[in-house]
Amino acid sequence: MTMQEPVDLLYIEASPMGGASTSRAVAQSFLDAYRRANPTHSVDTLNVWDTELPPFDARMIAAKFAVLRKHQATPEQQALWDSACAISRRFNRARRYLFALPMWNFGLPYRLKHFIDVVTLPGENWQWSRETGYVALLQDRKAMVVYSSAGDYPATQPADPSDHQKPQMRRWLQFIGVDDVQELAVGPTLVPPDTLQATREAAMRRAAEVGAAF
Image (cartoon, rainbow, N blue to C red; front, side, top):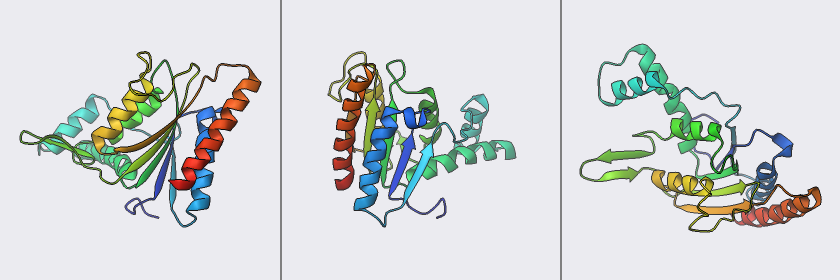
């Protein structure tokens, strides 16, 4: 499979905790059921902690404007911008998305935020003009987001005022055109082991149901 070929499902792991991660355990149940239901579908897995993400710093911003505003980009600037575009295109080529996403300090893990900043690029998944304003470029996409949190923050709308995890994901996905989003919130995880195990198992069963029909 080349980076240009479409992918049926992109699984984005945003927890660094491996087998100890609640969000990843539940997402894996979704993924296993999805694969059983769709044995011919292609799946790409991207762990944001293992993926090399270019810094979105002053050098990258200068490269962005040099390329997009048709200035004379230096070879270094073009290479920087191309590195961001390559990651964005890997994301954009998927038809479906699965996220395993823990809550950190009421919001997103910083590494996932870095990933979002790298892949959300003008001309790749959104565009802007004076006539139209912002326009999402992704179409006919769907996502499943598995959230976990130490506290009890269900996937309700509007979200709890302290919950900055779900609103940010919802707004970002909407911004780039992923409008069909299903959510499963697992929490609270800061509970006795027996209680956590029961919570995880119930969430895993629900995730498998959703994955089989996704």
